[in-house]
Image (cartoon, rainbow, N blue to C red; front, side, top):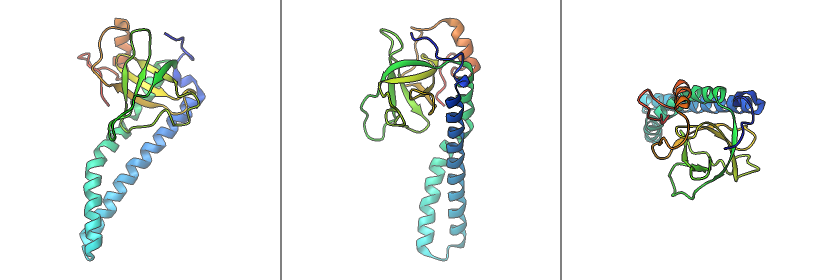
Length: 196
């Protein structure tokens, strides 16, 4: 296991800036999605021009499908901050497995010999290997490797939430780690990891 880079990830100034950028992006997504649905709904209510009506109908169907995901992402951004304020950044080797088109972005982090969990980037896929990343074979991780946490390219400037691709096992970590993971929302009372 690597040594922590800071006492908690939030102590690293680029991380705080990266989180502020995450909040801004999610706010823009939420406002943009809701506004486009509102505009399309308004156009549909007038219904004077058939082409505008048809285009508006498509937008409304798209908004209905996407708005819940965007809203959940907006409100779950606090979980990212809680993880960053509770866990230190640790640098690990990683790899990005090839994926089928449309599948979620995944990253495999080698925590220690024999334990390399696969994580999905949620709620929206982010190509971490290409996102301002001078070291694509390394990644910063804050959280509990059994239940997920937050990852960023080396430097902590682009924090995103990750969850285990497969249900977590108990093969790594101490039982007292569960209490911190539960407090920051990485694990439920039942012991099952959260997926949002």
